[in-house]
Length: 94
Image (cartoon, rainbow, N blue to C red; front, side):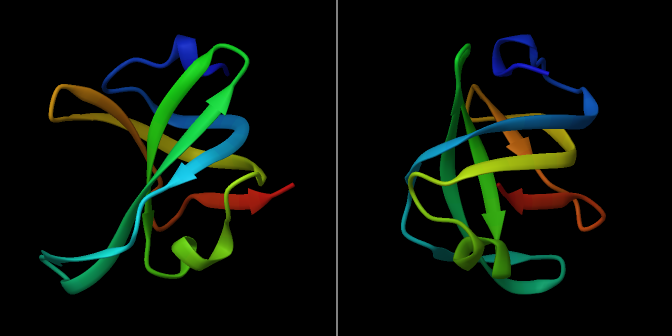
């Protein structure tokens, strides 16, 4: 699937792209307690999308890495689409 084809609410996404930016990690309070999160920008030849990275995922990737996401889903946050990865999803550096 291409980034340009993504729409709010779809799930079980498999996609590949390149990490072109990663924000500094920040602490947020969740229903599971305090967790680290960072926003990465994922790019393919059709566009870009924000990707939420949680905890160990943050240290798994760096700017310039090509990655694949399996089992992702799309939400909208602050009027922008965002790619999320559930605990059952997979993030692989290619």
